Amino acid sequence: MLITANPKAIDLQAKLFRGFSDSSRLSILEALRDGPLTVGEIVQTTGLMQSNVSNHLGCLRDCGLVQAEQQGRYVSYALSDKRVAELLRLADELLADVAKGVYECTRYNVPEEQ
Amino acid sequence: MLITANPKAIDLQAKLFRGFSDSSRLSILEALRDGPLTVGEIVQTTGLMQSNVSNHLGCLRDCGLVQAEQQGRYVSYALSDKRVAELLRLADELLADVAKGVYECTRYNVPEEQ
DNA sequence: ATAAAACATCATTACATACTGATATGATGA
DNA sequence: TCATCATATCAGTATGTAATGATGTTTTAT
Image (cartoon, rainbow over all chains, first blue to last red):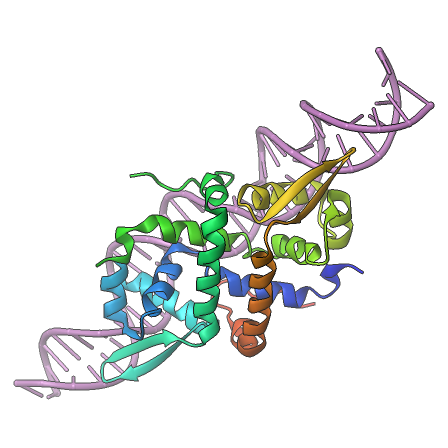
């Protein structure tokens, strides 16, 4: 039976992983591993532009990876589920072994040297 | 300290997750969860074009997520590490809880109805 | 009420990359 | 060797989406 006979689950999963597949979003998620942060704090921690952070946060929130809570005029963001952190940790471990391959994977984009 | 002070780890991780963040690659990885397959078998199972499958397999192989082994004129592919399957399983679990959010996330691309 | 701060949204631009079809490479058997 | 099968590579195209700058919205303080 074709896997694509039921494409929805795959599409959903791909969409979930896409939340993790961008450096900026990953920076945000990593920053939130140590606890909740306001948008401004995330901007400072990641060094990204505010509008960019807001965009990514909106995406991460829509997809359920982070939660927002209004606190006065600040909005505090946090990872929405332990398993988000678990996925990050598991990826860390996997990366420790396959890092060489990933690093040398220049098929699509080359990591910028500097 | 800026997280971006050491961007390499983040970039690598993003690249790793990008391996999982495309429906086609995910279909391939899912197909390989049940054991090794030849390229032709993957083509049949996923319903993707052969050149497309080969491209994605090259990417997945470069990044260390799958292993290739030549067998006669066939090439057999397999997941390269248990943790690849673990990541898929963990994502399944997470998805079970946040699926609603992911499904409704139309920020970027809308899942095609049919 | 007004101003300022914190955050969100929008349009635009630029780039990355998935897909296709054609072709090339390599292995096997006649 | 030659033909065929299995897989890989390539160029071209189209689309998705990250980043930016400008603007909108909400909250708080004066």
